[in-house]
Length: 224
Image (cartoon, rainbow, N blue to C red):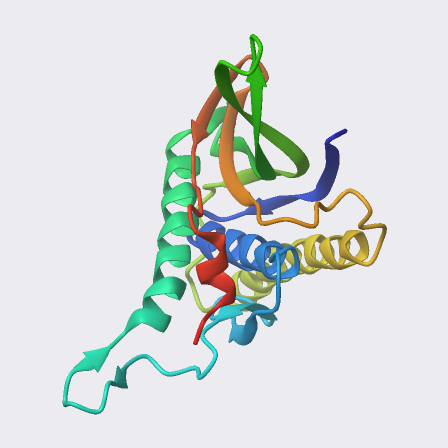
């Protein structure tokens, strides 16, 4: 199986914008590529004028009762587990950034989907598990640490708004590219349960993997 690579438009963001922007993109892709029906949840960004859809629990509640006075948080724990995998990957990404200029850092984040295939060798006496990656979403991010103007004069206000608008437009462009790709061919998507991984690249020859795995993908689908 050939691996499809999708390159998302580059983002240039301030340090305080990176987490929310990456959460929006990663959760959107995970929702789109979920291997089965899932309940949606709309999330409105705090730092951007943008709303995206992600995987949620069926009933949308945080805590349910089993009828005996005990709380059951199984459904929300699935969502929290996915949050942790994504957030941990973003933290690793931030630590893997490479300086490319004064106040500028750069890194590449890759979200890959794969399936596990069991094969047998040597007359069937030796079993081997192969991990087949069938799709990768690649995003390069430039983090700009240049101090923002903090004064209330007209020039400072205009500059802050310009920086905000630029970052927001870049994020919206990246999201539109995700939707464009998602609306294309899906013949390469396997009709089986699969997993995902998120990896970070410092340099082309220095790849630091953060392995984020959903070991029981059916649980993501059965959110009741």
